[in-house]
Image 1 (cartoon, one colour):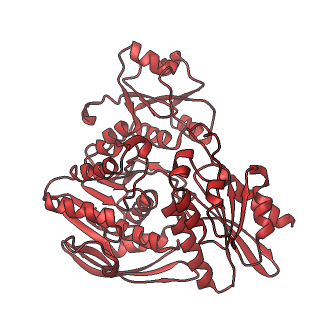
Image 2: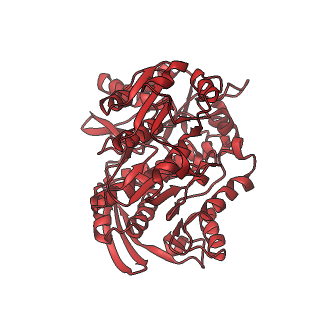
Image 3: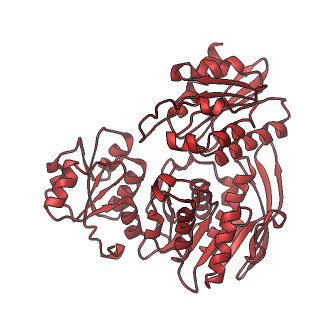
Length: 487
């Protein structure tokens, strides 16, 4: 495996450059003065932004695209999962002996020379990474960053900053997180997932242990969520191997007695505005109590904010300034994202959209919605419009999805969004709805175009509606609002 520092980034060609991850790194390359070329199947806003920065982007894939700059690139970047091996640009790169690397390899190369702050975990890594970036920006640290989602306020997912730190989301789905050299590594949660790649729970757990071993010796830190059993256990194992490990969470809910709590949750209260949070910090050279009101509901978001708090302070931020940045954090696209409200009989019906696509995530967002409704005191209910993502995940967790969705008052369940997978004969979302409580109002809706009408048919004044899933269900949020206005 080539050392990232040895990649020649003078001229970089990115296949699928309009994608959220690729376009972000391409912007950082362009901002650093590199020659950037690329291709994609269609024009888009990210492509137009890159062109304004001097990048040359072709629509459609062809071998000649490698010469968009007038010279062959020094490296070609691709997503091995999304780009087929017979792509003409990949074939041309191999014919010309041009190194072909993954997005994670490019990210590792861009982080060289920076203090690397990596956030990983089965759930919560995008939100925690985003909170860390926003808090550090508020504290004046101006980090470079690459995130899996767009910051709502900044409207971007990547930036080449002037500060020492580079903050990035570390993806475990294909073990690409092992390409990095973290100075600060945060583990939010660990729960078996992506078993199509890892094939066993043991292999999935092992990749996080391997990631912990990459933390910079002596000066680096592994930060783990004490309230997540597998993250806490990973922290304990790392501590035994001589790695600096600290944790965050509530002492009463902690799964570890050996990893010290660097951020102890003293108080959290769900309010109409968000989560009123008080944390005791205990880090080298820092012993301080901070209080902030997080704008996003849910205990899981409070935990995410605590991981971000430690990461920000370990990166040189003043605790008070980092806490202020967390209070100022406006969220991430598709993470409990507010989409609109329609008044019904003097009470608002509000619609939120969330990317949750694992049972644990679905349960967390529905609990957060429930707590928000109860804190507001309008007497509303929680309505879920859920679209399962992947046939393999649906079959693996059908009972768990049914249990998670039962936390709502009513649910409309769309058919499975296959994404990269082919349909499985005889498998539909009914394997979930058939396991849900008989006394709960549940609609299985195989017709995507009917989803919004189904939701509105069960909505009452004061309800909170959530569209949930990693697929096309996000488009239903706007349709629900239109149906509400018309009804």
